[in-house]
Length: 266
Length: 333
Image 1 (cartoon, chains in turn orange, purple):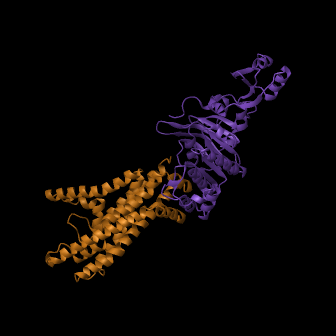
Image 2: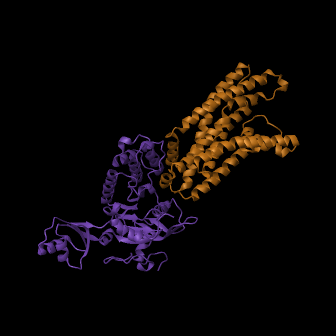
């Protein structure tokens, strides 16, 4: 397995996609820090009794800056790792070297989860010091001693990993690389839009389960998982969000692996 | 009688030439016989949704022999090779190497090397990195990548991206990948496809070198002449079915020989040859005479006192022999 992990890691680093993604990631972190920093300023300017978010929540948002696009990049790395094999027909050489295909898929899962974690770490290495500096600029402590904030930081790692798994799963389902990446992006933003719409309708019509829709779809569940505050009364608890996200990843992984072991490589 | 084992002439192939020993005895076709390096295909069938790409195909490749796997495009050669390599599932039948399906080989790259297509590379990756990735997956030291690149003469291009490679360079890289594990068995799918004459000559020489090292080689081609000088045995298929199997020398013997004569006394020579001779007159001074030796023609001309300008033996087109076995409709379906 170590050989396979090395093989799959080499596949990532021997093309330039990973650092193009990395550049995008750094941009995403910068933009998110600006937005979240402005959010902190706005929240702290208002009366503490009427604040829209707790200090922990504000700190959590700052420290997970870059997550919104970052999880997408992690997922794309996973999708590319599998669809490249079909697009460039390297699946032939790959499965000749390792005829037990499930081992290849497992190695891809591990490697892309690793890249997801790496991306999360890179985001937080920037976001945590900068975020702490922003907070201290408002004479607020970093909140890094707060259990809720530490939990959010750790869960942010999990989130990136799970999204990488989702990306691989999607890549095994949709072999066409362009199709898979476009589907990923459309699904990422599309489910948010549909979720928001359904949740809005649910709130307007006072239908509780419909109002919670947004938070049961992959991105909403991710958001729930990495928030310290309960976002709305309709949203599940953070661990519910985590279970959902893990379930989405597991389903994608299991189905994709099964499909790949069955498929004719020609 | 086991089902799926070819029994000889009764299933519609042309009558075997004299000296053809007939199909191998059934016990030798036992696909599970643990003979290292032997390739066994027995009763192999692949049914894609509507197309039967390979239809009850059986043949063996003995260790240390070089076998040409011939057939027109779409005959099922690639599908057969991919089934042997565990890339395509079998509908029925057996495809084993050394008595085992590819998936069950302990370290496949060290047992079997394959070069299937010249297009199976990530274009943005260097040739060397492509090989390093395979080394890592196959448990082979990465230094081997540089060795095989040297073997196929690709060292100067090792660190260039595959997208800058010519067709010939990609074929060489594919061959290098197949040689990574220094395997005893090699499966090569149309290795000369898309090569220029110089590349073809290089590839032929390289394959002869590999064969001389005693490796078992199964090389597919849609041109008999392409492999005739390299292989010992041939398996000819069309429409996924076996059409002819045997020694290449037997097949070559079927190719008609003619003698070409240049003389300014054509009419005199024709009279001397007599009416039995199969003669084609191609110009005022040129004759083709079938089924005789040039020595014979020379003797007749000498006796008749006919002056001859040129006398040579012409091997009929090898492809004609090949077509005889495969031309029953187009190969592409």
